[in-house]
Length: 87
Image (cartoon, rainbow, N blue to C red):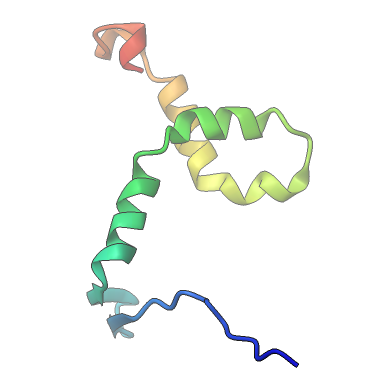
């Protein structure tokens, strides 16, 4: 029988949490993990939330805060924005 090996990637994260105030005080991670987080932040979240909002699937209701943020920006008065593209 052939030996099987696992090629799973592992991420090491060190976190210091203030349990009284329920906040993260310090976090340390490998640069590859930080790169992945930054790449996720560059995704067009408005487009994703808008497209997922059109689905009738209840599994996507977990995007509640993103959906609320998208709706508040969508309903933002135009007098405060220079152009529609800026929205």
